[in-house]
Amino acid sequence: MRLHEPGTAHHNPPFDPAIGRRLNSLLRRTALMSMASTALLQGWLTGAGLIVAIGAQNALVLRQGLMRQHVVPVVAVCAMSDVLLIVVGVFGLGSLIAASPLLLTLFRYGGAAFLLAYAFTAARRALSPKAGLQAQVGTASLGAVLSSTLAMTYLNPHVYLDTVVLLGTVGAQQSPEGRLPFAAGASLASVMWFSLLGFGAAAVAAPLRRAVVWRSIDAVIALVMAWLGLQLLLRPLG
Figure 1 (tube, rainbow, N blue to C red):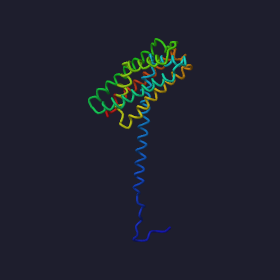
Figure 2: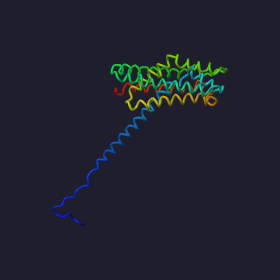
Figure 3: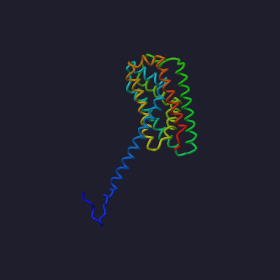
Figure 4: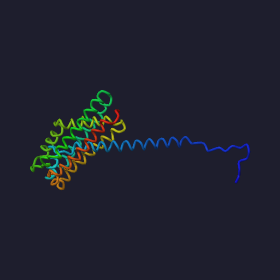
């Protein structure tokens, strides 16, 4: 073995600052990807929980799917309208709420109360459902169908309460980097659901008419909404 000669020092190679910068950049990207995935999932769950419910809009989409008439424009109008309202809620109302500590607090607890009330309502439907989703058979022109679709979407107060206010409230809890994936997740849930009803109507119509299927769906919705409501209450503000 060769020993160092007296008077000589053993020097470690100098640390390259570029390596440190690359490592920090990698860690930041990993953290952002994890945050984006969480926000995307939360947006999808929130959007799915709100949209998967018995209603006139869903019945219209299912009916058009069963008759195979005007399916593409109806699905497109419903999905694009939801995406528009989601964007308005998350980036418009959500940004307004996030800029005001008072509004943030009020909408935080109000949104949590709404989510928990929604969970209670879904649980009650799961225990005693009245009926499945019904699709009436009939024919109508494209103009009449689109007019009905637009009216059911934009003249329904629940649409604004659910899609704009509630999603905007939950979106306001996200970091600025998390709002886009949250909105994308909620939009994806809407597009998937309307596409399923419209283009897969022949396959899903019979099960969706059964009350037991909606009992299971409502039970899942109740659990998801309760979880989101509690998370909204317990997570730190900001």
